[in-house]
Structure formats: C-alpha cells, structure tokens
Length: 290
Image (tube, rainbow, N blue to C red; front, side, top):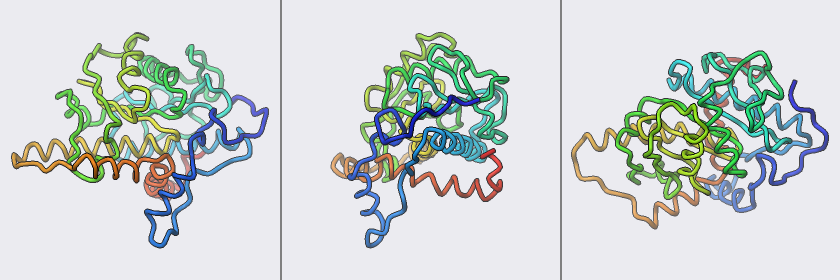
C-alpha cells in the first residue's frame, strides 16, 4: 500500500507545488489571448489526493513515451518524489513496457532502496535507482526525473556537446542544461549516479549523458516529461540542421533568455504537457489511471 496520509497538503517546499508563484501565473496569462490562460498546476487538500494525481500523471507520461518510441528493452525510468515523505520516491517496475504501465504498478522506495509502498511484488531497475536516488538527494527542489534511451538523444549524446539555441523551442534549455562527459558504463554503482547529479547542477533542468541518453527534471512529472519530449526533438532538429551544411543563425542571448523566462516556468511546462496527456487519456479511455 502507499504511504498513509497523516495531514492535509499545503503548498510547502516538500510538495510538487512548492515553487508555483504569481510570476508563473502571470506568464501563463501573458501567453494567452487577452489573458484567458489555461489553469496551471492543481492544488489538493490531502497527500492522498496529491499522490494519486501524481501516479496517474506518471503513468500517463509513460504512455506518451511509449507512443513516442522511447522504450528500449528494460531501460528507461521516471521517478516522482512522494508528496508526504521527502525521502521516498515512486518509480516504474522493471521489465514492464511503458505502454502497459498503470498508476497501481508503480513502486515506492526510500533513498536507501528499500521498498516501502505501492507495488511490493515488483522489482526496480538497479541502475535507475542509482541515478534517481542521487538526483533526488542532491536536488530537494526536484520532484520528478525522466530518463530513457531515446534515439536522437543517444545520437546527439555521442558528441558530448550542449544544444545550440537554433530555434525558439530549444531556448527552454537556455543555460539550463549541461553535458555529462565522464561516461562510466551502466550506472550500477552509486558513484555514477552521484556524478550525473553533480553534472546536472543546482538549477539545471536537463543533462545530456554522453554515450547514454537524456535526463530531465521538474517540479511535476508533467514538466519533466514535456522537457524530455522537447529535448529529444531538439536533438533531432540539431542533427538535421548540422547535416544540412548551411550557415546556422543562432538565437541571440537576449532573445534566448526572454524565451526561457516566458516558457520555462513550472506552470507553463505543466500546461505544455497537458495536450499530450489528454490525447493519451482519450486514446486509452484513461485505463492507465487504475
């Protein structure tokens, strides 16, 4: 069973709603015609409600990833920090295809790797635990982490180079992504996860893992998942642009910073992902919420 709820959830630093600010809401309003913006991250009155919402959106993100073709054998994982217990997070079971995952399949573990709730009959990816636990330890502000071996992410990772600001969308990563260029093989050792977390930095939203793939983080699973989809497509765009062999025009620092400020708030990135989530919800009749 999931960890029990003992108190109502308030918008505090321990939950996924922690850093939602008036500025985020203002940005959402400014991006909609005449200020009629879409609703941002929802608020709940209890840990139980928040936990269920997180798990449903986690499962929905996996369904989106499956449809996008990010599944590669038993590799790839998403984790979400528990809203009540800051030293616990939920992660997908080993060996289940992304397209089959449901909210009830997720496993809750503590930072030492002990299963403490959820699907207690399943097992988790050992390398995935090392990566996710290290990032959750290093970044208390991070509540969700996405990592898969997507095709274009792996291809671009071979160059050990950051993405160039060659279009509006990639500016969501402006000065907010890094490159981990000290590849140490499958991350079965805690030290590899710790080095990846260090490469992500104190405020980074994403890291390109040389010879490995991509990793993104967020205050909600929706934010982290949207950033992952965007980064994968940005790697594809970068590869296509480089292959064309023509002169590239880079977005100026001023405009890139503006785009980042407008597009990279937690609420905005949450809203960005809802179109993907709602489409998957309609296609599957919401079966992943079970």
